[in-house]
Image (cartoon, rainbow, N blue to C red; front, side):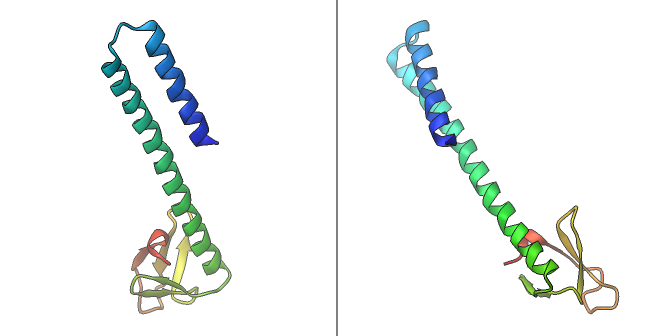
Length: 109
């Protein structure tokens, strides 16, 4: 849906430029391509962020269910790490060998 809306906006932009400006065709096409690339870049960024957010939610869900989560060189579990949900970070428990170490949930698989 967002891609269709982006194309509609670019089409309207080109139409307005075509009928209401005195730019030549080359300038109109370049301007339209710049707007198109900006909109497509924004859509790509949002898609990537949604994918990353879903991955972090999955990691946090598995941790909350008591499963072990692999985060780089760390095997994160409830017995060795606590979860800071606000920062989405695992923090090593004092009684574990990872005391004070911090691992971002976005670095986990």
